[in-house]
Image (cartoon, rainbow, N blue to C red; front, side, top):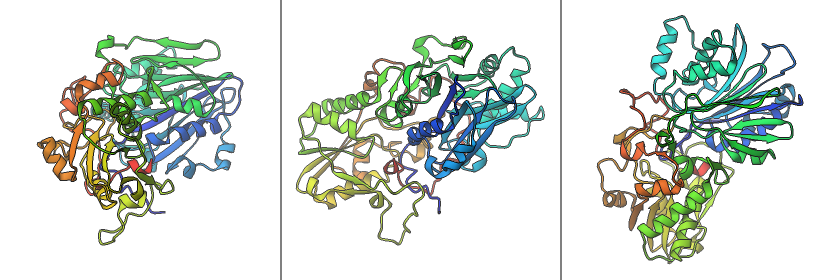
Length: 490
């Protein structure tokens, strides 16, 4: 199968999704982790993996399996049946820092003098190069190019001088700068950690006599688990049969300094998830309503670019009174590995995955809602498709502000000069994508979207919650030759 990322450049990518589980009754967890990862597939489609161990068995024995591709491509029933263990962690990955190779797939499994650790990480560390160099000068040999291995090494090192695995996790996290949501399994404990700013989501669930720590609540719903609570920014949680859920808030910041990634609400998270008590679906409905209030236009139809634009389009319709309708049909069977049409071919990569319903748009003034414009190379094609299908006017509304700055915390927003909004007015962007009008969500609306939660707006304002790195530490994830969008594959 030919691997191709031809949809990947004009949209955003989340780095990872994590899912950890501990069954206190001793039942195997691998198959449940598989279904949890399936629910988190939208957070990463390049690689995935599962690592499990038996808490009543030998301490050093961890069974793991990982590979490149989607969850259902990597795992077969025989793989899961062989993975016996009542505690484990799973991971889906899209590479931001670190190349896309099997070696960089997670979870990472580390055997060391105190036992074995399995670790899954979502986020980006801005001080990973310095930490890696420090470890290398003390003899560490790295098998991957990802910052998650740096975290694993520090946890193992701190464990030698700590009373417990959770203390080692906390002490290691105190060395980290940036975004992280971690799930770690030690021989007898399930541990979760969230960075003090709360960039990435993490929550706790329960099913019968087992506990789960995962990126999104939708994964809990998928496996029939009950939501217990969110892991708080700066919190380290430890789950064991003896003590249940233990909490360490040593690293917590004052609430006003927290900085959640607003794109969890705009785009990354599944709409049926709740993050820190806020419904993702409701946030997107709000964004659409705000667009209707702040950027009104006369039209006959409001439609969303699948899938993340749909809820915002419904919100726009509700606030404006303009009918909401489906204008696009998405080919759900074209996965991440389809062969990209050649430049000389008449087939468009966009049209392979997305087509316009002519009957829905012909002769109509259409408002098209999308979550973001990165480079604009897909937006102009979709606008053209609507016009070719007979739309008399195409008005584009975006449920986020314009991107003007890169992100260093796990979202692969490219360098400023590659952003369509850099050094351009909204009118100029409108001309480039071929729309009749263009409107973005106002920055002042973002906090309302997140119901007042403190958020990070660095990619819009250049004002980051912490000092950004002097050099670009985001790795080689961004292929400059790629100029199409991933979102149709979701």
